[in-house]
Length: 190
Image (cartoon, rainbow, N blue to C red; front, side, top):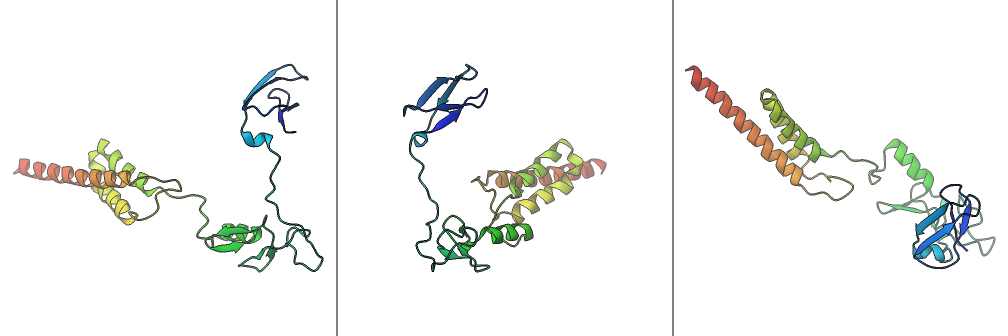
């Protein structure tokens, strides 16, 4: 039987029925707890764990000596059970190789952060509108950032290219306005 904890005192509250909405009063502190439960909370746990060794002659996992080896690590060759194997960029790696690759920054397929060049380009293009005299520096910078990183992946989560389009548009508009301003000042002095 599954349990949940009281939100006030962390005492276990048993789940007696398989209803979606659950309400109970804690026997320890008499506070009411209300929860909306997922159906999986009422099912017995399904194990995706590795298989146990059937014979002593079978290969065992490097990390779990009582579990049957499923594959070998493509980097170091250690035998791994289903629980330990990690698929990354078409390779099967062990936890140690993934951690070592993360530390040494040799795993190119392991994304933990990404620079959002589209947001940088848009900021560089729009912020100088408040200070027109820095536009000759920031508009080309915004155009360079937008064009240089046009094909880079924008984010780990899907994003549109609207920021890049706006950065190019504002950068060109800023340059155009600055050129018109300079030409206008030059014509006024003549």
